[in-house]
Image 1: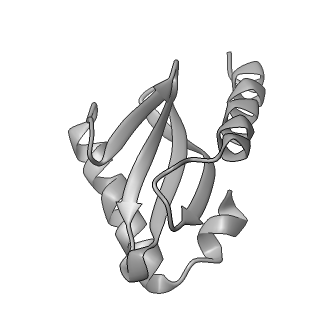
Image 2: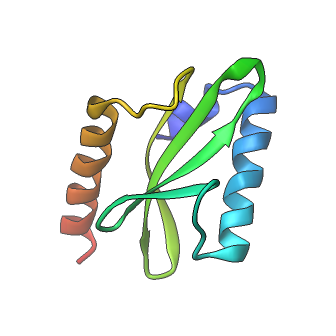
Image 3: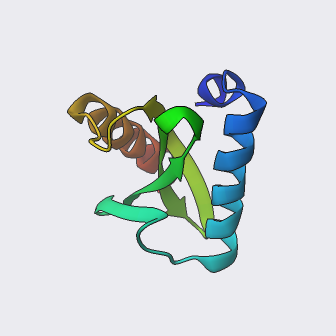
Length: 98
């Protein structure tokens, strides 16, 4: 997750960071910025330049936002492999932090 974030451009990090900040201030939130993907799993929906879209999948644990997976894409559809990656990371996180 950290590698993905550090690989983004400064402009992309600024947009995503501002959206995360807005969520932290206004939690709980709903569409269009946040979408619930299932039990204990949400996504931050950030619109980047050049028609690109960022999705940061996260969970909330003890009032902390835990980033699980991130992706930059051009369509609004979240691929199953990305959702499965986030669910697997959530499963591991819950084992380590009951």
